[in-house]
Image (cartoon, rainbow, N blue to C red; front, side, top):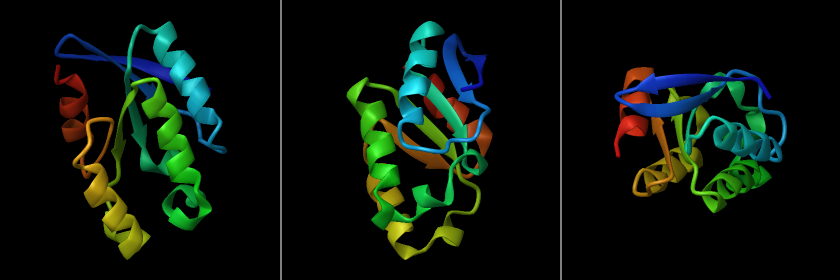
Amino acid sequence: MEVRLLERDGARIVECVSAIRRSQDALDLIAAGFEQGSTRLLLESDRLPPAFFELRSGFAGEFLQKLQNYRMRLACVLPAEDAHGERFREFLSEARRGRSFRAFASRADAEAWLAEP
């Protein structure tokens, strides 16, 4: 798993630059975060497989649960959330209430949220 370390407002953020292929890749991101001393992850939506956006596949739930188990915070840059269907939009609406996963239309907003204490 290829990652890059970003620093924003004193926060260390690990950005995934490799394609995610399976839900187990979350464990590689967790390990990369711990290696970099960070619990904050940034992921562009084009790194995610189509199964992530098809909720009935279970991919998103498994992937996000692994991250949540290790108290990792994930910001996903998802400029066109309307392109993924009504159920996925409902999922994002619910996720926005939590503290471990959020989707943002812009990278700047995603980084700002991850940099919050």
